[in-house]
Image (cartoon, rainbow, N blue to C red):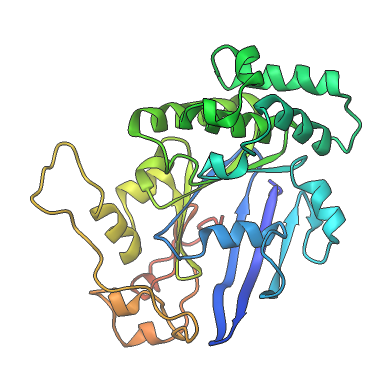
Length: 332
């Protein structure tokens, strides 16, 4: 199957007063049509920067892409003009962010913003009346009660969960091929979070979308994703089907993330944590970036560690598995 999104050896740096910050280092990631991928890792590991850089949303300067390729449906995106990228964003690729109040203008009604977004996504080919009809239909699809009333409301008149549904409706109105959801439930309470996740899973399946769900919470991505890529300090350290990640996590970092999750049937006095902090990416280590926090690190970790197959559709960047690649294992 030809990937919908094909990122190859992408590297991105930020030029700062203190030096060059290596935010993304030789990342390769493929996403098939209709596939839901979870991109997980702690704050600062590069999840959001990776997806934003792929679609020209990281300011240049101070950012610089130093190597790599990003293809959407076989079309190379790196090097496209801002105008060409604007034509792709919204119509072919849509994004949902974690704080809806930041992305909804408080002085305009919800309907006005939806209609403007839909018309902009269409390049002006859709008139106001048709855009309003599409907007009301999308508000109904995201299960927002009384769509006509919410269409006339201002953002501050809606709850956090309702505002997030508005952003989902806005993102999906143009029927994009790919949806990127960047921590879309972080600011919501647990009950509303579950509703939003169920809604996203339903819409992705019904509309046949591919999706990248960015989160620091493996429990969240497990509800909507079939595959997980684990990022650490600007690199992908493990990539596997969701069941494999939970049943047989290979990388020590992934194991640490799972150990830190609370378990309803295994109460403990204190949750597990991963000692230490992220490495300084102004001067990143040449080898495994997790070695300084890993209880299993050894001399071989000082050298670069590529992703290796350790099973069907399961790759890991760890020296503990250098001889464990299954013959003929499929790379994702």
